[in-house]
Image 1 (cartoon, rainbow, N blue to C red):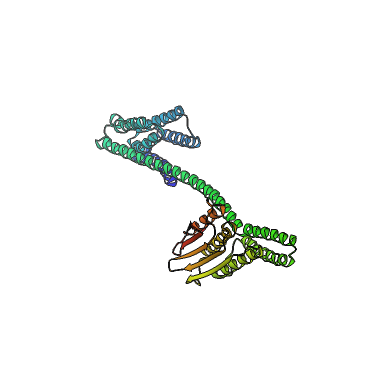
Image 2: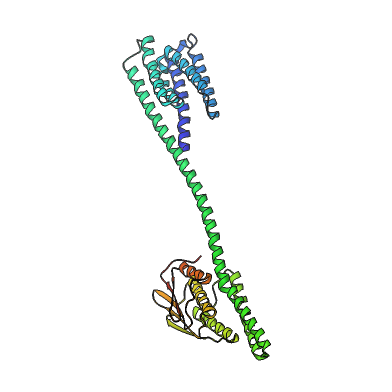
Length: 392
């Protein structure tokens, strides 16, 4: 749009130059010997120079002083009036001059000036060159003036539209920058939350188990039971190795695990069972598989299932004081389920950080965490397999 407006402005100046040269040529063609006896040539040169200088100055100044602009227009008008007084061939300079006045003057004053220019073009030749004047000499310039006003208003509408589009583009660019900054900040917060959940579900749980086992080793040594202490130290070693593997996987940004979900659940159950036996607080844990558990799941969903099972079993051993727990993993056509049931003392009350984080993790893949507690606790995870959501 800006290029179009620039082209229109350049076209206006070229049109003025063409009509000025054309008027001079027609005058010389009609009266070959009159060039030296009339002021047409110096007037033409003066008008061309004044027009060019004023145009260059007007384009170089961001806000031209109004008084200077009016003086320039007055001089251009007087020189054109003098040319029209000499020869009717210069009448058609009216068209670019009307456009120039409309561009540089306020709208109302510009329209008045256009009418004045038409009066000069229509009636000065009638008074000074009656033999060459006809009704068409007034009607033609009138049509040209109306056309010039219409073209200028179209130009003005294009200019305003271009300014509007520039403003909209600037607003859009600013909005995009704000949105990008907001998304960046939101991404940072989501990443912090994700890392917090991952640390809680992997490294923190492993270290918590090691601390409990270490206390059990101290108790066994105080009681003189070296065999029990050795078993507990072995369990600590296994737990530390598992935690190290989890930490390495975490550092690799939780790359897709090499084992299937059922295999990961079996290892999780076995580790939890061994840890509780080493602590002297055995817990009977059984794992049941239902449906198409060999079905390959999207990596984010598989990761959520394993993390959920780990968090729920961790809550059983830490809070439930249960003797038995059952983990059931089922995969169906449209959803998968993970159930962890225990016969402990029931849900203690408000959800802690681990369960709140687990609920958020499950929700990130379009799932839902349900917990019921009445003479034991039943925790159920439902994840639709038709969900296209990805966790953060």
